[in-house]
Amino acid sequence: MDFVIPLPKTRRGNTALLLFQCSFTGFVIAKAMFDTSAFRVAQVFEECVYRRFGVPSLIRHDRDPRFMSEVFQAFTEMIQSRSRATLSYRSQVNGQQERSVKSVITSVRVCAEDPLQQDWDKIAEKLVFAINTSQDTTRKETPFYLVHGWDAQTTLRAMTSSLKRGSGRQSDALAWRRDVNRQHEMALTMAKGYQAAEKQRRAKEHNEALSRLDKAAVPRQGLG
Image (cartoon, rainbow, N blue to C red; front, side, top):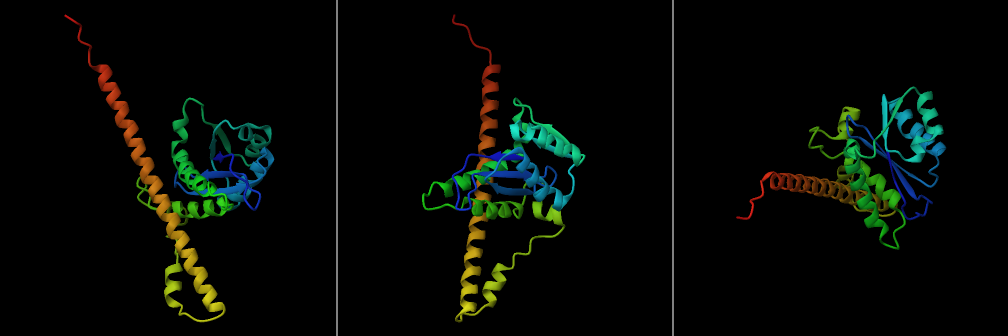
């Protein structure tokens, strides 16, 4: 679990995004928040994770004061779950979640840069759904499938094609479904793009690190 803060205030008053990710399936949950106190974090954890999936065997987080507080630690003890803070010099332990955080926060910031755009919290929810229904290159399945046992049945295309143009409520429903379908496709494309860019960046860093090691291993020739 990790916080994405600070963010511009939305119309609903949210200024922070709390992300949860299952280490086994890669399934991501996002919760936009305006109150980031330790007590509220415990409430959100109970609402988003505990009620849906039960008690996790281990909760991994960074050393954010909200997660290290007595309130949150008492909550984890109450539900009989272990809590482990990532060491500051070993941030790669949470690397998987950091990549998801980057995908979400990059999209959110692009949205937040527009002064007329004040609903990044809605965009984040759509992006998380797109990530959960995208094929994971490591697991060879979507996080949604690994959690539920079936693929997400997005029937938006079928509903759009089955409706005929009409008047009144039918026309409004058709326009709404087309808009939702368009937004879903955009979020899915953005998620895939950011995942590919992050994979490319990591490969580049790895190759550069290997190159530096190779250069350091070559003995320097003395001047004769």
